[in-house]
Image (cartoon, rainbow, N blue to C red; front, top):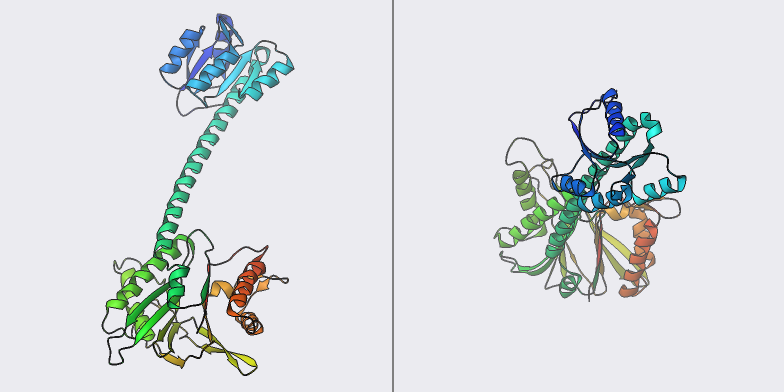
Length: 401
């Protein structure tokens, strides 16, 4: 038994009053709730369509002065996507196929009227599905447009490779968001400390915010804003000072309404190189690696990070440690997020791991920096080949001249 939530508005193109009556009886017996408008001529049909969109059109094939194919074309131009069922006497199989290929939803022989209620149910369900599909596609398009706009905003604040080269030359960046936008970012500035050292430093931060995609991107821009605040703060004069500033400010901002505790945060590595070519470093779960040539061998040194992130999980009074290392000409510095080492790939489908990345950097240390850069960028792409990217990826390398 078919029970509709509202009365269907049905337009019936039929010039035989007996056939029209039989159709109405069939629908009533099926329990269909409807209002039926009987039409015989093309002018009447156009007038009805001008007045609104019916829920369904039933049409005999042969009508005074026109036929069902012309009626379908009129409907398609005036009220497209309206369900249209051909209800007629005997027709050839070829004609029936042509009708369906033209877009008519169904055809039913008047001698088989019992099929009409189920056919109506099916074509109306199909229309509803198509309408819902259109809504979903529209929402998806709008969402994708919003995400693409968010990417433009994020890329607008992200330092360009040229800006990175201006401060740290030569250098390169492997930046590969998992989605359109990223929770991984890097930040760059040149400042002079306000303490007694009066150091002129070039600062580079690489950080990985909780999550990826849109939530990660929101966090990355918030962190970017806080990093910009540190430039103007008179008591922030070292990478450790920057981390302590972030660790105090970020949880306060995220939990200012007090309704729901937000423990999101970031892991970060900050390097500052002064005019004396001394590297100053502090990190929260992210280290910095320095590749140095010693006679005929190469050594990969690591300045370790604090084993805690920037978040409400870390005590706001936590003291981050500054580490310093005099740099030598030819030293190569590498900062990266865990999306690189956690990526599955290679012949065995396993994680890259820190150990494997260390081996690759040492094994390619004899290459010129430009050739090592090309090797690493190709390696990262080839390693992941055939495997889904699991996280945002960021890797920055530079050489000291």
